Image 1 (cartoon, rainbow, N blue to C red):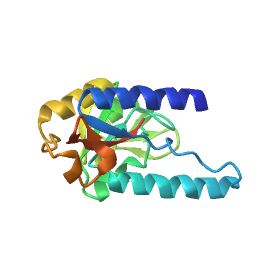
Image 2: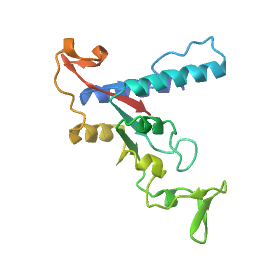
Image 3: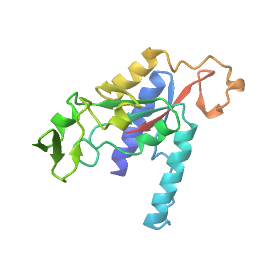
Amino acid sequence: MQWRTANISKCCAVLCRERGFVGIYPLDASVPPTLAPNEKAKWIYTANIAAIRSADVVMANLNDFRGPGEPDSGTGFAAGLGKPVWGYRESAASLIDHVPSISHGQAAVCDGGFLVEDFEMRINLMLECASTLVVSGPQECLGQMRASGAFNCPPFLATKCTKPSFVQNGECANSVYLFL
């Protein structure tokens, strides 16, 4: 698992760099190995919150995470901060078509007994309404982010960049927090 995470991080860092972004990956920082499990969770939480706050934009994998129709819930924090959120999802199917459910009159209920939203959206309304959703993968999402023109960081000299770690080719680059 650790090897896979490191390779995903490296791959996405390259994809970001190729498009003029600086990628910030949630698991780049090393969790101190001496921490107890609950302390590790708090450490990761604190590190991720700080990284999201420092990023200019968040790109999120909105494919299923812990079951049909349920992407990583942490994505909503960035939207709550007013950060631009871009997401990618492999399926264009609506939530009602994607989540196994049984129709009960005007509502559909999933296997767990919960109402399945039917707003003709692909994911939970709180995430879809708060993000620009691209049906594809991370490479296409980053490409559309760049093409949108919304994240073209003005060309600052490296000495004037407010985030010196986000300098590429002598210019300031937009930072992207990556939920992968």
